[in-house]
Image 1 (cartoon, rainbow, N blue to C red):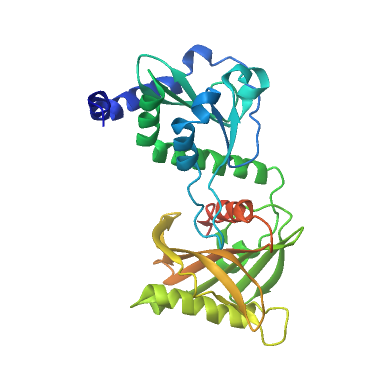
Image 2 (cartoon, rainbow, N blue to C red; image 1 turned 60 degrees about the vertical axis):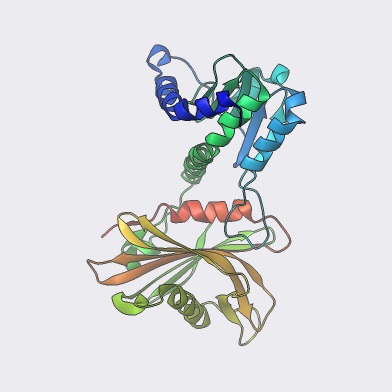
Length: 330
């Protein structure tokens, strides 16, 4: 690594913090009009000279922004990238919701700005005297950028959901919990301890299920017990198309397990692949098991998608966003 890049690394975090704070201050333009941002969900516009896009700097950006979206049966990138030449970065092009903008400058910096040209919007500005300096600054802060964009996209998805939210109260009435989801989802099963909500899509359906468990069920090897419980619930409540078929966990693709907290409740997040016993159906799922110590129970909320032969990223992004709105209401 060149000496000047080593020196940059020592000071990069300080520079980022100062610039990010300063660019978020909009006191001098509080009365300005900002158009609504545009663009598909999970798309990022990258602005840099074409020569840099075709060289190492462009490859660095593509590699960092195309990390795998976790929990899908086949690898799909977290973000889709739209390249834009700086000469075209004017007018409506500046209204993209997520922008990564590279500029040549004698001062190296990584700057995150909010609502610069439209709202909601995140603009990442990366400067440096050459492409190598810019690539270093970008790589050092790529994880922060991905996290910032992810939260921006989650909020945008919720904004769209809240244009036509459900008026159903099955989850509230049955378990005392709430999820924010679109009115296109309809309850298809509501029993003593199980609620199944479904949305029809062009080639399949998206699903939300919820149930509760006694407090002590996950003692011991929690990861194996989570999968065993999923399979038993599937056998009881989620039948397949054929007689004797039902929802289970695909064991060939090892699920991901994470410790999480939602609405102040600790628990476990599981992402993996479901399949149907005695049939040929499969797809991704995301499952939260949350400890409710007051009522001495586990609350389980899960989303799973059946969308054969098409990309599943946006479907699972929708389900993940819905589940992130979990809260206990009584």
